[in-house]
Length: 219
Image (cartoon, rainbow, N blue to C red; front, top):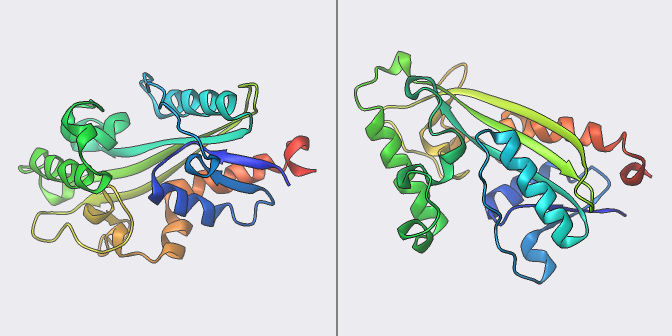
């Protein structure tokens, strides 16, 4: 069985991607499963595709395995596409060091949500259209890209008092009301529902199809 390493240390992403890739016919490992520490590469890209490529090729060369990386985030129309590629550190202006590095992932998520709701304070509910976007890149151990896939998950950002809510998911899920009904937050979906609808689910399903066409992985 071929091993594919997921280029993330985010436990939420690992849980989701392992569930989505469970039937891919490959062994799925997270970086933490490899028994060594890694210095995260600088994500200097201006697009999700550029950052996913940086992560996939860097970790593929470091681990000697095929590597699957994704870069994903939230785009809000009223904020001209922000938070975008700095979604995970939006409250800190995209900076990953300093105070941001001292917080847990859950604490950063909470601060990101607070900033997002504050930035949208004067925006009417009808103008809060948003989407999660995911780009996924697969690299071989030499750093050669073999597949790139994308997915988008449409919704709106709810109003304070109505959101945050729900116990599932991570990141901005508690404030993201899923289209077309906009009655449930992404954090209120079951794992199976979220995987069926989400940006990451779409990108993974397209990636599974791509993996099936790569002889080294489908043999």
